[in-house]
Structure formats: C-alpha cells, structure tokens
Image (cartoon, rainbow, N blue to C red; front, side, top):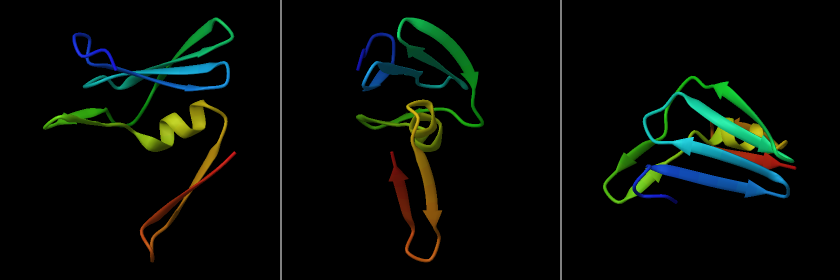
Length: 78
C-alpha cells in the first residue's frame, strides 16, 4: 500500500496488479510486461480501508471466481 499515491499492489507469483483508488483502470505486470485494463468499477477508500474490485484482481492473477448468492459466498479457484 502506497498511501501518498492511494495505490494498492497485489502480487501472485510473478504477476503484480496495481490498483489506484478512484480509478477504473488496473495495471497488470506479468514478467515485466505491463497492460492496462479498464474495469467496470473502482477501488474505494472508506475510513481506513481500501475496498478493491475482487473479480478484476482475481482474474488478473489468473484465477477464477464464482458467486453463490444463497450463501453470499465468493469462491476463488486457482
């Protein structure tokens, strides 16, 4: 977390995902190659916490996510 830039970095293996609060873009860095991706929402800061767009991050690191509405559970699979 870089507080001055309002930037969160999520790392899985050699993939890094950069998320700036308030932006509808994420940057995916895989082995030094960076790609910007437009997403349908933004990360938000509420109080002392950042809330990130989970689906965008999970998919950016090569995993899958599904939603079970009845139990309100997100399932992440590698």
